[in-house]
Length: 490
Image 1 (tube, rainbow, N blue to C red):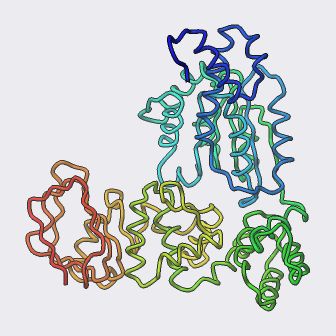
Image 2: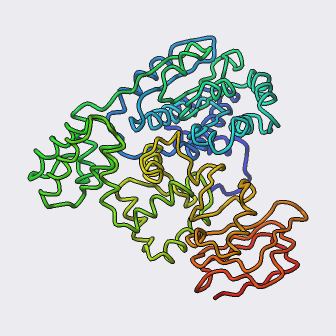
Image 3: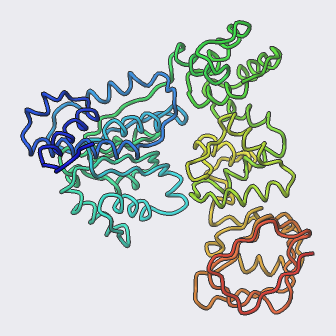
């Protein structure tokens, strides 16, 4: 503590001591710096510390990734006068996104302007390319374009004066790459764009001179290490299961996602016959048939927990709203699925993750597995499901009615007691307009658990609505205004 008059020299000396501790630089080094250099050093250090708090989330205890990072960083460190693109490609579940995130985090301290667009394939399917452009431009320029053409113009004109770091995750069509990063002259020299994709051809069609990186499976040693960390929570196999572990890993190959999921399924399984059954199942699957390998873990779930997994992949992926997850728990509890136990089971088996805001997160291979199960094995590109806006079936969860052209027909049919609506568990009902009118009488949804009302609903009905058999577990009301509304719980 300083006592008495405080002089600038005292403050400088305290700052130097503090900076020496934070930056781990010697006092003699700092004393030799000019004032301008010292200020610059302080700013750089503070910014570096702040950026570390916003690094992308990466799985702990990574296996076999160090060599890949070193090879890519060696290329990044090569001097250049242009913007550059790194293209990481390989099959689903191989670890492309994880590698890209590690590279992004290592580079992030060198960039003020950064953007991470996650799961572009799925985001473009639900929204559109303009939505992705808006996110990218908002991250870098803090403005939002109104359409794709304006978005391209904003990127071409606005990004030229900023050195940017961008990660475009899971690109699956050249139109997506063209709209977001078509040409290197759109970007300032020193900018780096990292792209992950399953399709090498997309990288070949880019007007960048792309540094392509083919990410292959883990070798046997690293594959066994990753499997052991999930099956035994150790770096080595339990003595009684060493041979079986090697056989399973050898049969399965070096796909990280499959190793994690199958290893997590076998965790605490002490009966050798269970392990031998898994080995037999794997030997009956074609090598690298990821979906069939992952299905082993899904099939071992009890029925209620299987339905929770299917509900998540069909209805709740990509919703950054912990409240939605809470309502989903109400619904599953009403179904008798014991959701707290079910969610823990899914997490332990590495089938889902829970984000910082309580949202559900699922690897794209596991998402596709669940949706394929919903489609009863039909190819996903030929099967429509409740994750599509044009789905014509009756889902268990009816959300975003403004996107559903059949919603008013749904109300009419449900009011007439049509039995095909008897399985609806969640109804979101509202309208963004100022004079919205949704009229229905005697709405009959006997298994409804969640009623989510929002917007301005002028009139829900002239008579009482018959909703639910034992009451509604959750009722969210958001800036809701009614002129007439009465609910009778029966």
